[in-house]
Amino acid sequence: MTLVSVSVDSVLGIDVAKAKVDIWFERVPPSAKPIHRCYENTPAGHQRLLAWLATQAVGQLHACLEATGSYSDALALCLHQAGYRVSLVNPLRIKRFGESELRRIKTDKSDAALIARFCLTQQPDPWTPLPPERQELRDLVRSLQDVKQLAQQQGSRHTSGPHTPAVTAATTRILSCICAALPMCATWWPTSACVHVFAPRAVRCMAPHR
Image (cartoon, rainbow, N blue to C red; front, side):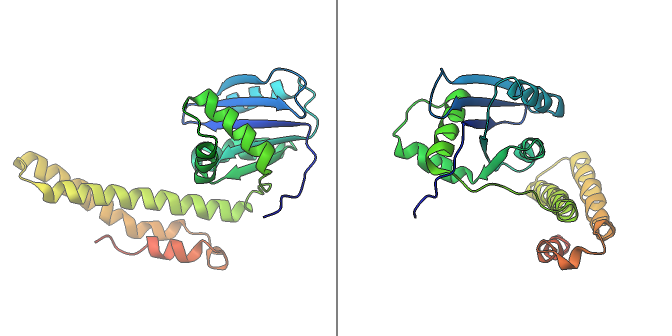
């Protein structure tokens, strides 16, 4: 595949975790030492990152982070709304890129630097957020999947035995409550859900727990 060169003045590699994000900022071409910083992975932390970027004269900035679902979505949207080019990349691509470098050190800081190098050399496609109604449906599907996973876990615990009568009674009540609640989830779906690509997945999620 031939890469189409995209002019950027700086790259931002972001390693995302549940509680924090590590960033690696580098100018293109390198004119100063790269900068590593760490922020909380919260709305307030995201705003502090934006405030810091505003002090750096970043020019055309390309930010890149792994697609890790709810951990990365909010930050990607924040950067996109601020006007920066953002790429959400399959973590497997980043892993294979790191393997090609034969790197041995793996820390949050080194992961952020790796993502920045990937961004600069591979020039991943820009990410565009889903329309609000599709974001809503996607999040509802994820929530329902979590509930069904909990039902499966409780079902496995209930049948794994042997348990004391108190444990058996507790798991039975929990499982009954979860399974009784699943049909109510049908009221979650927007009336326009059928026109979106997530709809078939939502229908599958609504199938009764076995």
